[in-house]
Image (cartoon, rainbow, N blue to C red; front, side):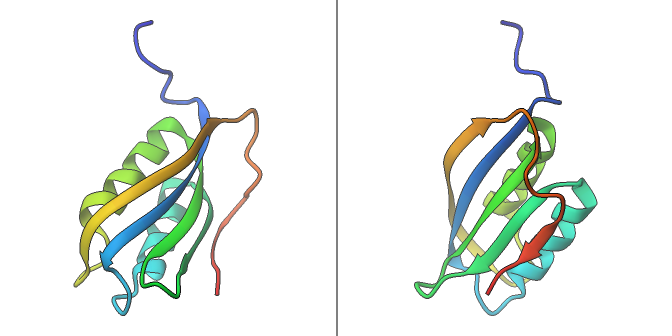
Length: 101
């Protein structure tokens, strides 16, 4: 009641669709995640999407999800961003944000 606490810790997995490879998307994603203090990882897939996992406060994740859904890296064209396995957690498992290959 009265909305969720923006400081609640959460984790979510994402997949970004569109023209999102070849435009340094993981690099920009990592930079923003580090600025926001989000842990997790990001990587390109063989099918041309970007996938990853985010962990942080609800407020941090909302900011990052908005970027993943609407902004992205310069030159990319985002069609959509699917979110899966959203859950609230007691503690963060990722202390930094990495690019996986």
